[in-house]
Length: 76
Image (cartoon, rainbow, N blue to C red; front, side):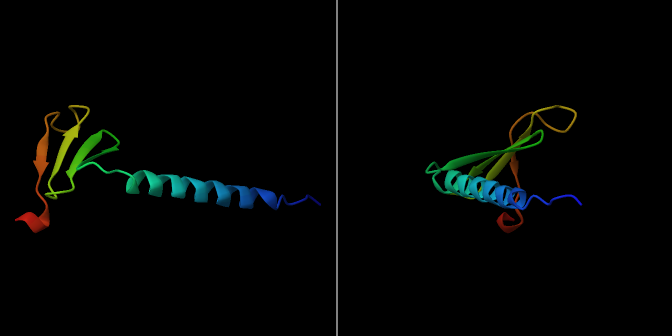
């Protein structure tokens, strides 16, 4: 019969907890007005004061490589 390693799930849980705390700290410690987020080939800039968002694609086959303001549903 094979032995089950009971320490492995605990180590994974601890690693996930540490990663979550690091991400939460990084998000909460940002004091700047503008925040930049990248997701795949898309770059987004968010203005925390006005709520406006701009996007740009890194590769032209996905969309415009120029900064464009994103229209949000609450701004119309």
